Length: 208
Image (cartoon, rainbow, N blue to C red; front, side):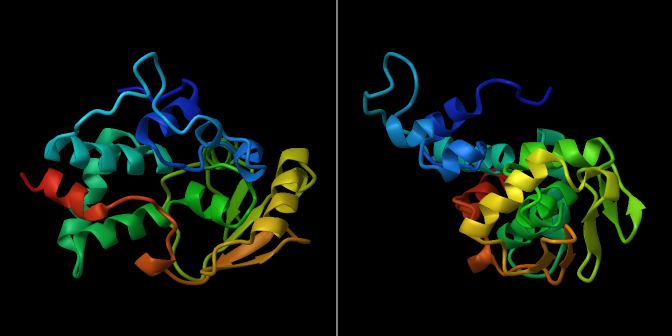
């Protein structure tokens, strides 16, 4: 299945939750979800009953769209999370948080994960001084993530840093905004991850 390229705010309205798919519009309080908090389409304002399977599927879709992960990648991450010690759902979210594109986003170098993925794909990001262009690269605690020298004055990166001065950055990264680099200090705990997903339902879905 190809990656979704359509209007992302439509996805947020359909799922009924903000997934941080838009940058400045969301941070400015102008997202479509806030203006029209109901599903798109002519029947969007009708109340509809959702089955147990439908609720489980919706939670999986939230996580997939939020982190920009395709079905095969998501399933493989779930299998890995299930093999790890501890809660499978929490393990899954922690693995998603360790993706390089997500870490770039969490450090405030991009206003959305989609833009962070683009920065990685185009070779603008260095990990421990080496260029890495794989968005799914798993960042380990202690690794240094930085924007390469030629890209530090990119207007979109500078704008992202400016906006995150107002919203703050994740507590599990240590960022120097002047030099545009950060350290992934630790893997976050579940209660620190602002992900509006009930991971328990995802586990139930894949456990059938």
